Length: 248
Image 1 (cartoon, rainbow, N blue to C red):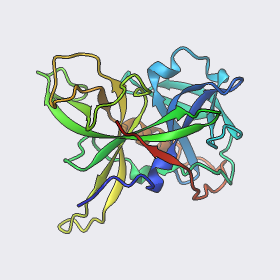
Image 2 (image 1 turned 90 degrees about the vertical axis):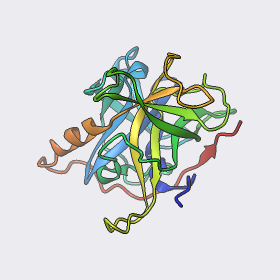
Image 3 (image 1 turned 30 degrees about the horizontal axis):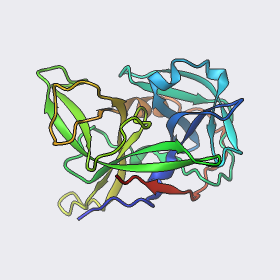
Image 4 (image 1 turned 135 degrees about the horizontal axis):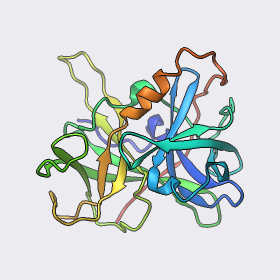
């Protein structure tokens, strides 16, 4: 059975979104690549208070290597922000592995696979770290009030935790097991982005749900629409980073 691997390379696509001048953490963002083209996705409510020119993406968890944000706009879902990079990603980045577009799940359905939200928090003494928050994901019939179909996808923590931490913009990853019928090997896929769920009407688990999961299909459209353009970015190298698992 698939388990949540805290060292999965796919999780290293989640990087700090910061205020460029001060390096103050705004929240998590995920960089996704289609060959040499790259774009980032972040929670729109995190982006909304900021002028795009004031923001940057940290390519290193110590904050020493920044790529400016050129612009951002809303995706099809109001909670999803698409971020245009203002410069090429450096050829060597110590804490970043951009996620290939084929590692983004085609739907928001986890099919019961082990899942976790990956977010960014500030470290004591400076710098940032990735945190992994194991969650259940339930498809809840909200009476037609779900985003995109008749269901709302809700993430509930497996263990009690401080839900005041950065949930907005956290990326949901799922560890899908192999499927011999379809000939598919085990995969770690990005499934959606978290939007804080503050209502109490829907509660599929003992612990209250704290995030609604929104789809990432805008990423595919944004990257595929650029696939015919000449390459402007260097080859994106496989690199390493650090991640901390959240515990109650």
